[in-house]
Image (cartoon, rainbow, N blue to C red; front, side, top):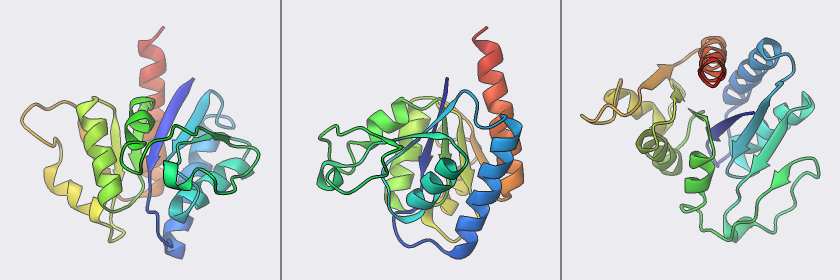
Length: 179
């Protein structure tokens, strides 16, 4: 089972951001034959995260949410797994990222940047979807590595179809490395 973690904007997304995630997730769905063997991990069900979860749900995919303590009691869809860890907004990011095999920043602000830094220090494959005007676009300045330790590459991508292709290649690499 491959676990793909997402960092995504928690505010109201722009229509083009939703469209880009639809394209990415449709392409990935096609390449993986219905998200076979994939579970998606997200930090909540609001903002762009909600749109991502809904697109995955529509295609029959499995999602696990890691909401912060402050928002654990919101109403969540019945067909998603909600882990109520009792952790704050920032702290819940650590188990989300550490549980991920691949980490995607779909555009976001400081919380998404925090999750990318955590993914970097945990040596997770990182894909940053850029060009949308979010603060995560600035992470391209650090590419290909955040620091001199060169723990894992920051893959900077601005096309949802290329993002799907690259993430699919990473899935294949992980699966072939574990056999």
